[in-house]
Length: 185
Image 1 (spheres, rainbow, N blue to C red):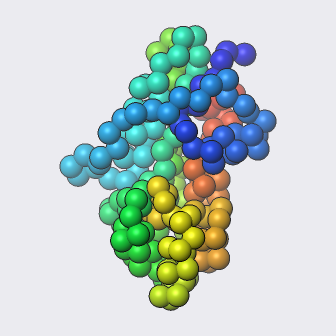
Image 2: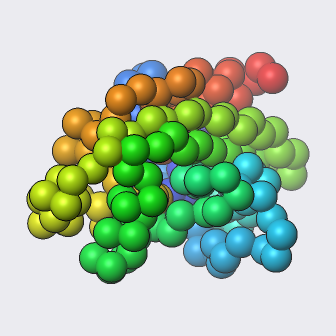
């Protein structure tokens, strides 16, 4: 089997890969501009960023696996919250409603080929109280998380339902990733 490089510094993605028995030979974080293009839909953004990350990381003779997760309410892309103010705004917007999580996955071959998948998952949040939001902000778990929350952590108690792939919401759709790695479409 050829070497595999994960184009992400995310510990969650490493842990998810381990769940399906995959250990990358190397981890190299892709450094790309993640700013949405004018008029770009959330689903196209997730796909484009996964592709660009896979193509940005070059490793001799290795396959490169990359992913990107986008949280959206309608066409509005929520940020990877960096400040408490951003996290509060995300949580307030998600409160009591459904949103979509798009995760693009791309696998670049050493020969220059690229295969990809896009997974869409619908997530419904309970109506959050001010105390819910403030307790979550105090946890610091929201930092650098798309949409300002981590489904695999304390925010799990906010989630009423998930229609689609739970692992995609965490950051890597495992079924689709396994298909790509096994050479399936």
